[in-house]
Amino acid sequence: MKQGDVSERVDIRLGLRLAELRDERGWSLGELAERSGISRSTLSRAERAETSPTAAQLNRLCQVYGRTMSRLLSEVEEDPAPLLRAAEQPVWEDRSSGFVRRSVSPPHPGLRGELVEGRLAAGADIAYDRPPLPGLEQHIWVLAGTLDVTDGDVGHHLDTGDCLRLRVWGPTRFRCAGDTEARYVLAVVLP
Image (cartoon, rainbow, N blue to C red; front, side, top):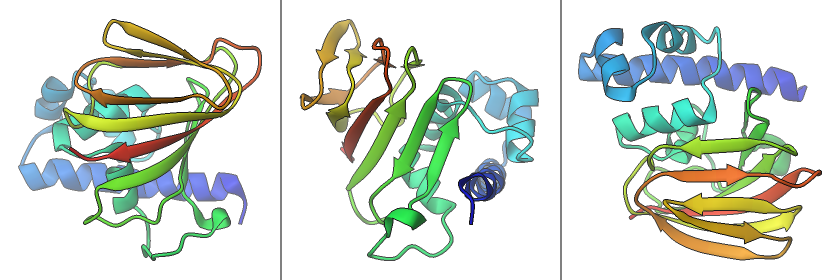
């Protein structure tokens, strides 16, 4: 199966799950728009899988629904297993920002930790206005390239091999200032 086919299937299941979460709470698109700061039309198009939400939008939705991004994406996986082969690891792409996210850990709703591979294209810049869950612990280990991470008002420049640990309470920003892609491992631990 081609990577594009897998991404399209993930986008469709993600849209359905987002619609289910909104429906479970009895919210209209307008109410969700108010809570998330995302327009009704964008939310509607994402739920119908006409478009994939950006990383920042997905982060806002995760915050509204009280989930990490990995947990939400694991909820759209078909059959979670304890072993997840590289070819089966779900990949989600934010084409507008140049961010690619691979869920490396086999998903399981009862576990607190997970591994994610992140790739940012040269020049990519992603800002999150808040964490999906306050106090989320993150370990960011750069495998290739350079990555600038800002946690609140504190900036960190990471070179290949560097690892940053932080507990996220406010806004964060990931930026690939180099002229080559940044590839990193993100270990996420629920509070």
